[in-house]
Image (cartoon, one colour):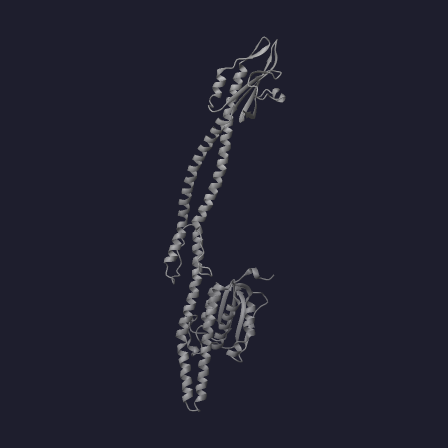
Length: 467
């Protein structure tokens, strides 16, 4: 849809929007997995190399012996063999006696804290080794000999290069698998979303290929979401088709029905001008009748077009059919059509609520009343009531009504009975049928014991009933 400047706005497709959403979710998930993989790799590397440190420290502690009342350390080769698994790391060790004196090793290795010296469990801590971060473990061994009693602390440390390399390798391996899985998910998501969008694309292609005047319903195949769109579009096209049909009928009716009365008025006018003065009153009387007939025709044609238009553009409202009957009587249009004929209003004290359009209902009742005034016999009644679960507004006269073969055709456009004698446009009852169809009601004409009755029946709205 173009804006006011005539330039179509740049829009993104639904596929691209969904893919952006999927990629965003995958990116967030990838970040979370990366952090989790890095934390897992670092923890795994720490546990693995902490066990190596602990094994080396325990080997050194097991090699401590008491000779001549003093601890002696014979460093085993196996201890350094474990630490040698980290080829790029430097190591340091120290063995301290009960008084903190260095027995062997590096004097720069931190001694255990007094609280740590009282604990039997290995103690891990981080410290620096020649300006580089390192990891240390302290293992205690207690002696109770005749000539020696105390605790020997063995501390072994190692730099963190191998740990970092192992954490990096584990993280990289996890990220590689995650990346391949992410690419597979992206490709699968694209194919699935593309397949899900195909019904929408087919719908767009079908609409593009359609003739501008083709308003037939579309096929509602595909997923439920697409079917909902198709049903909504079909309802819109049905309303549009009714509007276009009403416009076509109005144009064709205007072109067909107005030609004869306009020609007749022109001929009567020319004859009135050419006739002698004695014939002019008769010519003028015929001209007035023709003009009045043309006015009624135009009025009913426009009323029918208005009713059809309001059926698709005006939402129904809750109303009382008694108010419709009162309004029709109070406007007193029947006094113009049949002066001196009294119209009786028959309504009860119970509300008759329906969902409808006030203007359309008034037009329908006026046309039923006009039909009774033209073709029926007095007395004439306009009534409202509820019968067989339907709300009814009816017009009844004392005549016998039209024959059965005429009743089957009455209600069609420009259908006149023989009794009309050209005084009716034939659209009145067609308007009533249009109103009934628009409001999910029905229209019927029937003979009764006391006369002929035309009834407009609508569904009752029980929510509007008064207690």
